[in-house]
Image (tube, rainbow, N blue to C red; front, side, top):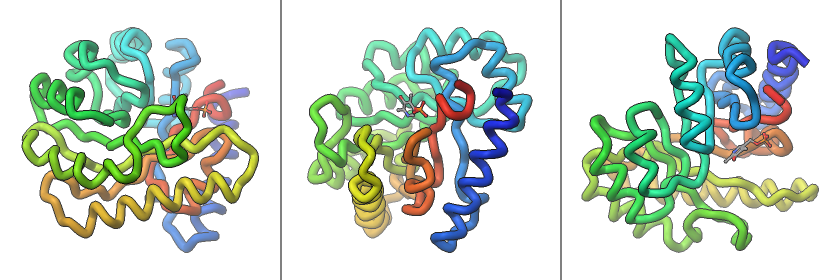
Length: 222
Ligand SMILES: *Cc1c(COP(=O)(O)O)cnc(C)c1O
């Protein structure tokens, strides 16, 4: 399928989901997750109008960065090892996987400008998933005030890979509740306006529950 065709379907689903919850669909940004696909396919995505691309590995990111003359907005969405930070930091606009002090320290040290970060939270508590527990979020976010190169733009989560829509919805709702708690603190370093949640299988629920960035791979670019 052409990216353009997939995108039209996804945009229309996002619009419906946004309207169901009285949201403006324009507040939802689509990140095309290109981790599975070729450089040509990533270029096709940009040609179709997608300006945000996401990669989860350093190699995939650098390879694609090098292939673009004009850079899209790059999102690093995967587990990030501290030792890889210096290789990716100059190329990415957002990091979605900040989940520990050592990583924050390294990002702060290597960044040449304020880095937009999402704090990743393992809401569902699945062992296979990275991220902080909900209880760890507030003290962690607060501790980041000591890192001038880090801005906490929002929270990120991955819902469990299950069919039960109510269970998925509960995960997204909990992320939004955590966001509200952080926002109440009015931290200068953590405006926390964004919610990065929703993938191919669950982005409509995520939009209904307040997602401002959905990360879509397989159903968009393949
Ligand atoms: C791969 C990946 C996605 C996209 O997943 P799809 O199900 O293919 O849409 C989104 N977020 C993260 C963190 C990923 O690793």
